Length: 557
Image 1 (cartoon, rainbow, N blue to C red):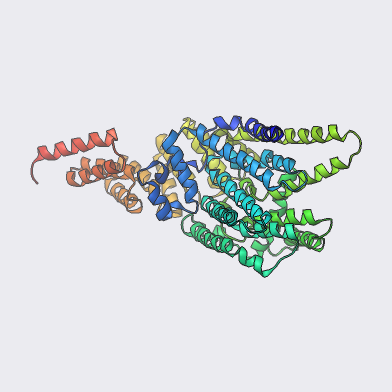
Image 2 (cartoon, rainbow, N blue to C red; image 1 turned 30 degrees about the horizontal axis):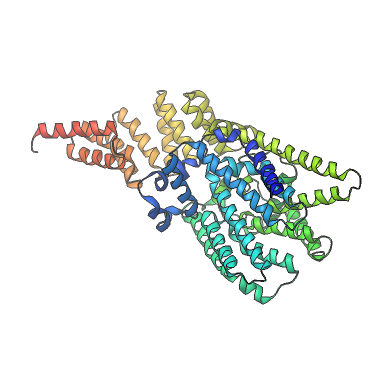
């Protein structure tokens, strides 16, 4: 028992040490949509909206976790980071237990837990989805293996496996390939397959099929993964499968550089070399298949698991993130277990074959390797300390990442470094002219600097790109009202409200404009609407009171 506790500490403490710097990190990109500005997390709508409306997206259990955390400690980022690290530690311990019959189980789990490619999932608060789903994913595998060990007599173990599988999918549907993974584990134990085994896995498969269909629909309808950026042909998508496989495997073997947004590949279906990665992957799988019951059986299991786990993010299906890049470190959080467990087993096998001083070399070399990857992880986690450091690092390593330039401009804006911000916005628009957010922010800076014609021109560009950009309508109206073009300004505020009925700023600004033209009844209506959306706003309360007073003083119409 004491020895097991020691090994647990040797697994958990390095993880805490490696991620220590990230614990003081801030909320990052997309954390506003998931946590800090998500009405289902910080607003009054509550759990009902998460579980009964499309607001739950495809990870209602993860959103529920965020809502519980918000109720406990508000918007202090430190506890959120601690929760992510704790989930990651728990996953590492569960992986160790799942691998317990495999040589080098502890080392394989340690390499996976400490590998720097995992930083994106652990240090980014939004990716609670990854670390939480991973716990249930591994718990499902562990319960399923326990059920197999009981000669399939433990109904409770099977039920717990099915329940854990469902909870994993409700946390994040990247776990959708779990039924296939369970099948691989079953094959590994017994080295055969029967129709009855397929029927046993059918409940897991049905749940996964529903979750997969739900996710595909959500990515298109809710996340917006539609349009020219996602209209890849069938050949391009197939070619991506091979390219993504070798990319992810390469990052596990040589994790440099790690980039928050990697360059977005251009896939030319007319070039034969485009299919070389796919053909080499097929050749590798054929070799492993032919030797699946021989010396390459562990490699067959690990690599097949890797390919299966990457299938949902291999490029065959549209994902909103593909607008920026076809690959991301957090996409291989689950998949990386296979190759890294194989690496752990291989290293221990080689060390066990050494006859001299094995008792010294084995712990020394294993410890040194874990220490090395932990150091790399500690260095990588520093990048996630703030939005500014994250976007600076991304823009430096991938200058073509237009999103990095756009968001870096926003961070510079917050520091009142407007000239630098404008330069970043202009670079983002040069790289991607359809970046409406960069254009909108650029226009706001230009207006603040008194460059009104340029600001108007930029905002009109935004609305040509995206006519439903409610913030651009609001900002354009603000500039037009300053120039005395009241009629045009009112029409843009009305458009903003039509697009986003709960846009408090637009209601408030429209109310002020209507009040200035003595249209008090309409002004009061919009002030009241703004106040219902944003209660206790002192500015809205003041202007509403003034409008009511002016109406009373004016008497009946």
